Length: 315
Image (cartoon, rainbow, N blue to C red; front, side, top):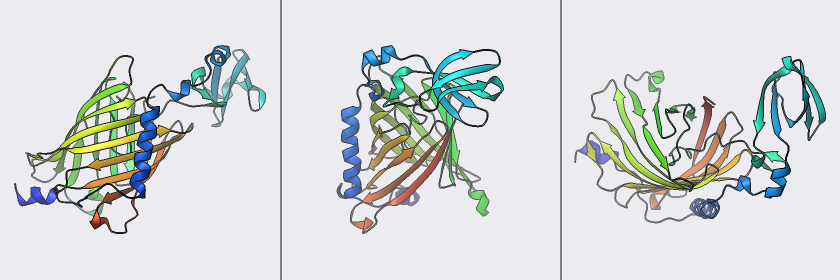
């Protein structure tokens, strides 16, 4: 093995899984595992749902959003009966769009939109596929950039870079992110395989990256994922896999609890655990987390902050 390869694999080493951050992450995974079956959005009483009238979300040109039933409509106006402000009359010229809503997504009087970031945790993907024609742009700490797009419901492609040329560097790191996903019919089991195929533009190199497979149990609002990844540097593939154990739990219309953890056999790399929160309204998502290497060398470090912003497109 070359000295450069050895150096690339040498990071903090962990000897155990401990600390308050890890306990939070593992507790979350237990909750996700327990709730990863039927979608909690459908926990309302079936008779109540059957009696629901068709609800609509009306978005105005001024950026306001109203939810209610349509009392009447003409070519010029729409009369909407809302639950919060009563009956509202809107001119067609004031309306940006009207969307029908699934009554099963109402919970405690609030509408839970479809999870706009259901296929990944902070960085690691799960085994759920990006729907065809949808995608997202992800930026972390301004420098780390990723774009992913669903070519079909079972195949997505993406790429990313760090624009270090802004600091005068000649070489530019680039990577490609292919992923294939399949789901078992009428079950909450999902399988995926993919890769992080990296290289450096402007430098002669055989590349660096990761080949991975993952299994996810759950749905797009709560799930747990186990993944195995084999890293490679200049054609030299690691002999033992890194293990990724991650979970997601939706606790409100726009709030998600997430944990993302990496375990590599002692003597190779070590262990890193993380836990945090995602705030995801309909059109963007903001992630904040703390990540911490586990082991003696981490000392009194509380955690390394992670801050990311994601913008979906194509929906």
